[in-house]
Image (cartoon, rainbow, N blue to C red; front, side, top):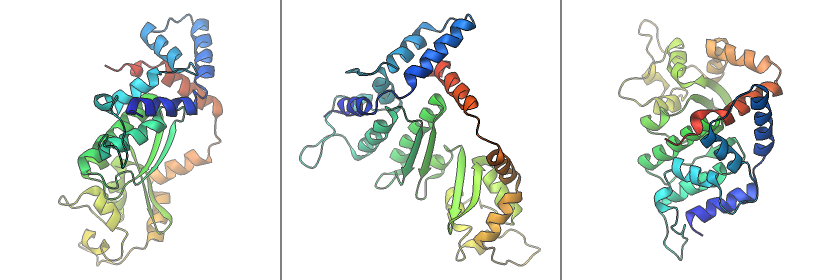
Length: 263
């Protein structure tokens, strides 16, 4: 199958999920508030919510965000038939997930076998997807390049089975500085995070010159995170009961947002 046919097949197998019901609820609310939707967005959403289509506007949209338009009509290929490149195949695999109704993606080691440029392109596409469609992507990467690391909104650092840090990317260095460790300019932040909890590498990042270095175990980092302002806020959020109505409102806002424009 071609790239386009592969995504269309995946989309038909997954269906439209709750898109139709949410669109109907949105139309009801717009009518009650005497609001007139943007015609282009209205047509897009109705087309995206219509099941059993041979061709889907969602497929065209995903092809565009993933940069696969140039090879949309090219055979994917296999061991017997030459097709698209390895990086494009990774993009197609990602696209097979995105054309469905799922808004949460869990992706493990998607950079294996790819160069840093291709990895950046894939993660950047996923970033656009989750920001535009209000989704969530949980991605594990092995030693990502600085430019790829900077695409992430939040960081989860796990060591020895314990969560050392979980929160906004811009606060992760602040947390380790509060523990006495600094990331040197010569070092990428992702590499620093992988080494700072290691007994072998930790001492090179010690920044408290007036105090002798002593190894800080993972358990101490994890405990300190609970009292760090990001950890406290996370604890408060987890202690708050889940509100389904709030989630529905967020999804409806995402559907009606003008971010669906492909300009």
